[in-house]
Amino acid sequence: MQKAQPTTPADQLDETDIAILRALSADARLTNKALAARLGLAESTCAYRVRALRENGVTTGTSLNLDLSALGFPIQAVIKVRLGSHNKAHVPRLFADLANAPGVIQAFHVAGEDDFHLHVAVESPRALRDLVLDYVTVHKVVRQSETQLVFEHREGAGVLPPPT
Image (cartoon, rainbow, N blue to C red; front, side):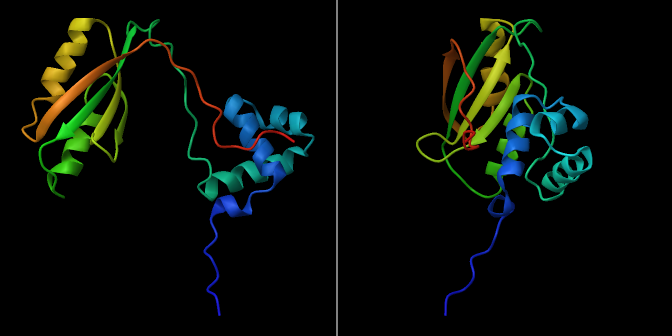
């Protein structure tokens, strides 16, 4: 006798849910009325579906895309961080410290040669150097860091299936 596989919220998504997610991924500012009209749904059905997606943890919020250059942070970089040792006490604490450093957009704890990747934005080359020296290499457990400038970035295709 086989055990039933646990289901996840993703296992329960139908075409309407995917269409809602695709539309909101493109423009999270859509009102319920506009979203319902775009998808040909009743407003009450649309509101129920969006609420269910949120309650089931499929959507976790909305975000705002910032023009970092317009805000005075034209230099973006990825900082790769390698540790000299690993233990349960210092890895989570270091991860929190790195994620909370000024200028860090995203912090990733990764497998492989590196232990962390930081996507950062700063106002100048000097500020990038200072970020590395003041917030990354200052930790005794950090063995090595490598900084790579970002020339350009693009959004990927994402995980939602394309429209049929």
